[in-house]
Image 1 (cartoon, rainbow, N blue to C red):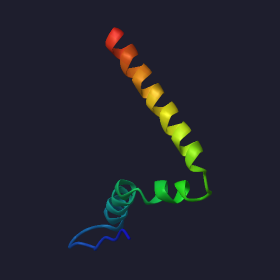
Image 2: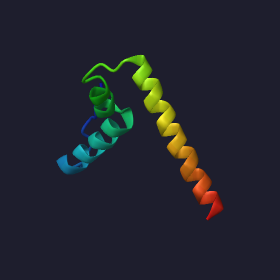
Image 3: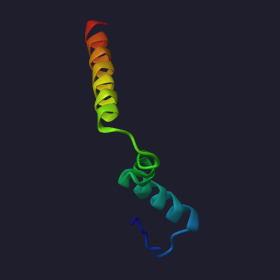
Length: 65
């Protein structure tokens, strides 16, 4: 789990900001949302292929522009 220690002369605002950054980088919320409901492996594969296809199209458009 993500944790932070209060450093000397550090305000609560800065502590919360550091915590939020660590929390986002660790991917805790992303993982929670991913596990909120079950998706079949075939659906996961289909979504992964669609994301890859969109990414390739964007890269192709940028290289042509």
